[in-house]
Image 1: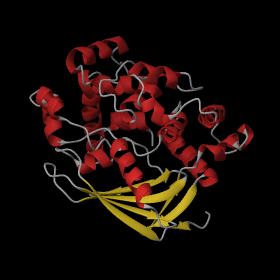
Image 2: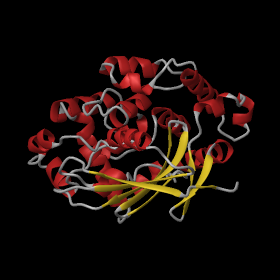
Image 3: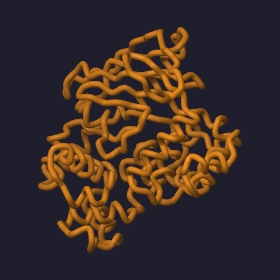
Image 4: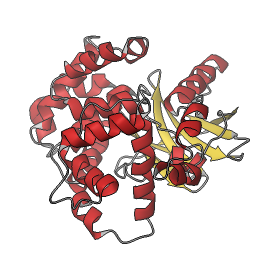
Length: 327
């Protein structure tokens, strides 16, 4: 392991998300596989971030309540940061973490739903969130393809150790993502040596699209839903399921639901129809069910049910789910 870069300068900002806001249910997603760029404990999330080509260490800390939310954001850096840098970083964090989402209409629409209502009240104020850049999300999506969770964790760790930057701050050591230029200089053979298999080609081509400015996250945010979808689908090795996750998590499209992966199909069959995963409900039936019941919040509604399942997994034995996760 390389010597970490010591981050000695600290800045703090206060962020007030819209109410209601559930800190832990928003800032920690137990369905995400463990990754070397973050840590979580109740009330605190540590997360590295590459912002304007500067690696920083973040600590989000809950200092409010669901109805009067307040998040203390501490930023560690190797060198002193300008007020303009901090302001731009805070604005980006607000967007990525969905801090300004208004849940009023969603809560009113589904708060009394017999299935969804109790989950909404349990996780009052939860929202989808994304803690990294679009490029980073795409890399994670690629390593998740056709692999067990255990294999994906191993591949991601190998990539961090080869291309990432180890940061030390607030008593933690966490890796920070690399800029696309770093992987662009690597060969496909070098990537394959990290045991990522055929995904090496996808990683190289997706990285190249960012280097050539064929895709720009910030410009894409201003595009229509369909423009975002088509731009993402043009990326090599990125399929409809990955695009669906990105549209929901990265671009906050709360009604996104046009594709269901086989893995999701099995879990949705159990959650919504009590059908055994080995004999799943047809995808078309699931899509019709979500369309009829949860439009115009299909992604958000399913997110609540999905996250509730993985929070339960922390405390309950679910053999049927463990077979599908294989961590």
